[in-house]
Image 1 (tube, one colour):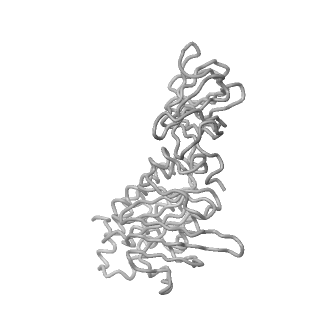
Image 2 (image 1 turned 135 degrees about the vertical axis):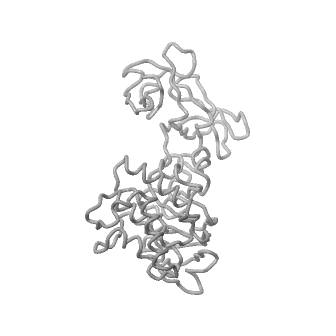
Image 3 (image 1 turned 90 degrees about the vertical axis):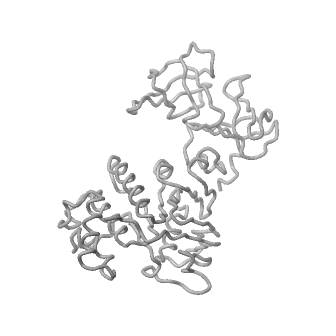
Length: 370
């Protein structure tokens, strides 16, 4: 039996605002989610991502704005549609299972009013339990399950609803690292197999990049970038996005000159007379000060005897399974962290740090950060 949904629901949000007293949780957010897209909303605590999801679900009433699901207005000038009538399912951070119902009955709950026969409903539940790997727990109760097992029940229940839109409220945040990785893959693959549109919120950058077709980055209630994971990582729209999606180091630099349509040469303050190229996502003026943001993947290490790169000293090294992550200082004080190498360089070793211009960004350090 297939878990494929009847159709995927598109989502359209226009100028969505939500205030709590004098706090603006959402500030005019607008976005479109194409049917079948897996959208991840990424941002720190207080960025507005949970409020946005709750408004989409109907748990919160926005102060103003319009929400359409599957081309039907559910929030706007024509009224407010109750959560149970929006044609969506939700997977919660705290599982939200019925404690008095068995696993089987929790998963079957969305099918109570289904037009399917009793045999078809039972077959669908069995299939979903098998797919999420908990068929052997069908007669257990939530208090007999681990966190990961409870979240699998929540996922199966959402898929059983057979709707075109599934919302995920940080479903992996309460799980151990190994369970997070396994369930992350299952959520992504099973949701896509169901043919549903997904809106998933997290504060974990690696989780967002691994799962998403589109990533929306929120900051202080504003949607500051909406793009593919690759573009958010390689072409961040602001210093905030660059910082939040992970940098090995950030340095003040002087802009020297433009050397390509989107690249500038910048002088490294920690190595006299040395410059590197970096991607500029805004027009800069030679002679002005800016910030250089360096991704961990932009830095390569060479032995100290090499003529490439700039002199650096290894301050720390950690085995990561696939190789080694180093923290290195350049120019005495400036630190680069999470610099990967298959070769282990011991603490105190003199090395050379080489920079890949494609993953170094030079921009205004304040723009987009407030």
